[in-house]
Amino acid sequence: MCFDNRVQVVASAGSGKTSIMVAKAAYAIHRGFMAPQNIVLMAFNKKAAEELKDRAIRAFERLGMDGNGVEATTFHALGLGIIGKATGKKPDVPAWTTDTGASCEKILEIVDCLKDQSDEFRTRWDMFRMVFGRDLSPPGQPVEGDAWDRMGTALIKTLDGQRVRSQEEAIICNWLFYNGVHYEYERPYETDTADVAHRQYKPDFYYPDILLYHEHFALDAEGKAPPQFKDYVEGVKWKRQLHHDMGTALIETTSHQVRNGGVFEHLAHELTSRGVKLDPNPNRPIPQGAIRPMEAMELAYLVRSFISHAKSNCLNSTDLRRRLDAMPEGSFKYRHRMFLDLFEPIIANWDRALAEDGGIDFEDMLNMAVEHVEQGRCQVPYDLVMADEFQDASRARARLCRAMVQKPGRHFFAVGDDWQSINRFAGADVSVMTDFERWFDHGQLLKLEQTFRCPQALCDVSSHFVTKNPTQIRKRVHSDTPAVGPVLQALEVSKERELERAVGEFLASLYQGICAGHIPLGRHGNVSVFFLGRYRADNRSI
Image (cartoon, rainbow, N blue to C red):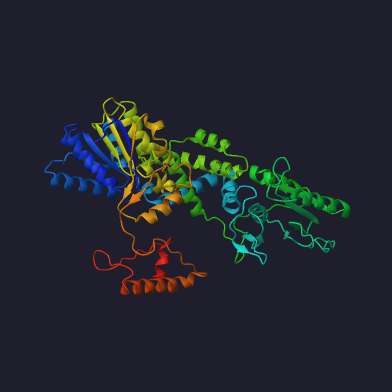
């Protein structure tokens, strides 16, 4: 019943978000606030829009009302219609922009052309695939390993089959492998240094062809180690002094050099000045058991996702570079800068291919529609604009909503749950919801806090977990739904092949509990079990 011009409903899971939207439309028509044809319900995909439309029609029929004029549509369909009205011609959306596989093939086609035109681009593309496929954790932070040693230390696999102790060392190994440099990892130092308190010294790298040792130190720009690395700097000094005393050649690299990219120029100079010939080759055979480089198709998929992110959030090259510069110290800025150097010519050629086909992509569809509405080239007829699942909105979607209600007397009603924001990969930006007032000026904040889906005990556990993130919008989720058995149970197995047995044992215990009367039957005389896996192959476990 709240008809402020800007209303945001923060909902719980299973609290009736869609029902609220349908009821809002019915109430507005019943009270004579708006005619049916001046109301639009917006969803994020065609299936959701069809469900909205169907539920609205059935609700109006129950109330004895005619709601056929209420429109339920997707953002993209609405945007396409706006462009058609503004220009007199609906643009084409080429098939290669809508299918992920076809989009990636198009990007690889663009990449091949760019490689032919520029050796520099070819080198950057190959280097990114071979050396920079993985990002780096913050300095000094523990990382997830590909393997483990006997001491329980995480080990990272490399392209040439090494198992090294840090992500930064792995990047150096991959760079050396890509350039065909012969080296040995942690070869024992040529002089015996072991004593009662210390093991034999093993420098990080040794280049036997030029009798050169190489230590990679976890030091920042000021020569400081992460605070959790106790006595680390003293160890650095000891190693330097040992090489000095024994007259062995030593070169050094640091974490700071890896993260700003200076390490590669430094290594190239140190090695080539001593007679090593660099031989870059992206097709060098990868040993069995080694980590695989990023495939060209995988990198193309990453670029396609980035195109979607950048366009959906109205970010041009200047914006992206500004964001890169603003990243905190210790970020792997060199990797991100290299990616932008690849991305910019690719997206320029992507847009050129669209223009040659006389078409646009889905991201352009929203941005162009926004500009037509903002500039007054198209008048939309809606007095009440309602957006479902608003936690999944991108900045382009938010701009479109804002443009449609910019005239006085128009109403915007957004329903969503920022706790369910999982579509970042598809261009969503949850800050559109958490910073609602910044986007839409002052508005009324309402909350749907009763869920009809989960028992209270599960709501309590999940709420406690989600609100560990201080940027989540606070709400108290409550429920009258009774619990059936324990709301949470953890089953652990040591090997994937044991999953099937564990699931079977769980179902057997569930059956025994039903037979004994400890677990009540559901509404249809049974107990339903929903099995959720990360991958389709997890179906094997059931």
